Image (cartoon, rainbow, N blue to C red; front, side, top):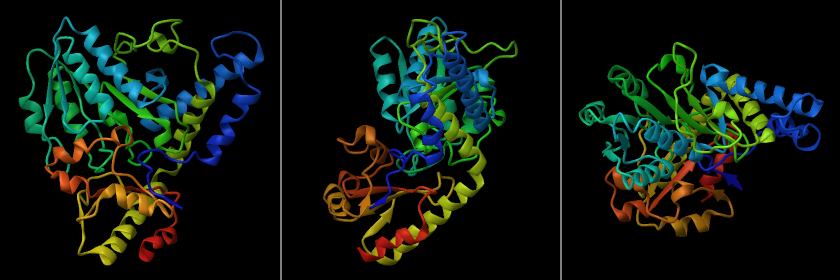
Length: 372
């Protein structure tokens, strides 16, 4: 079977698996303990993993806090900033095409007295800088905008948006889950980004682990937040609880591999996308339409309408040979809010399938579409 649901999750790289295994069976010590070898070895391995993730993002190790993934990270940053800075304002800016872990967190905060602006997007899911600027108020404390859309692949202009927040002295958070490992970024070039969230399993690491980036100031102090978890003070008091060492080793190795292979991986993704697009156009030109843009996007994500065909029925028919999805795995039971936000009708939404590729796929494997 050809797996084309890599925006939902990716296969663990064999090198990542090999790196994790000793920390499940042999080096099982708690890195918060002291002196004995298993604890020291785990602590050192966590430090190395933290550095690998920091190097991938272009930040310092101190600015990386490990989490269970982007859902926790998004909750942690948005709720933490809202609570800590509530005395400065109660207004949050976001967009209508965010991941559910952002949208539902914002809706929760509305029940607690916060005001949230949900910005509209264009036909490809991008927010405009003008709309963004107009949404600011004296009470604004945080803006949170997804970097790359998980259904359409569209990239928001995070540089312009975060730079404006920097000018206005407003915190800026981005959910970068889909871009890590597929878009070459260096946060040194984005001084306006205060916080970032990501998950290991989107770039061939294990499920259940991710991280947030929390920017430090000129005094080497991390931006304060109210912790989501209180307890033993792990992760610089931002995220208490015993560290999931095997998973952390996994995200560290995945980050190391992503950094080393970035150029080749992006090239492979672009080539695979171009080839699949060509096949789809040649094979189904009369009955398909592409919802995604062709540029300024995450390589390897195609969002395709099969006109007049129910997407759920089509996916069931394809399942023996091709694994794909209708959209976000975190909202699979509902019509896509992303496609609704870009103006598609319910009929168009219910005929749309997302194909999300991997650099691990060989071009010849995509020829299965020629046989459909």
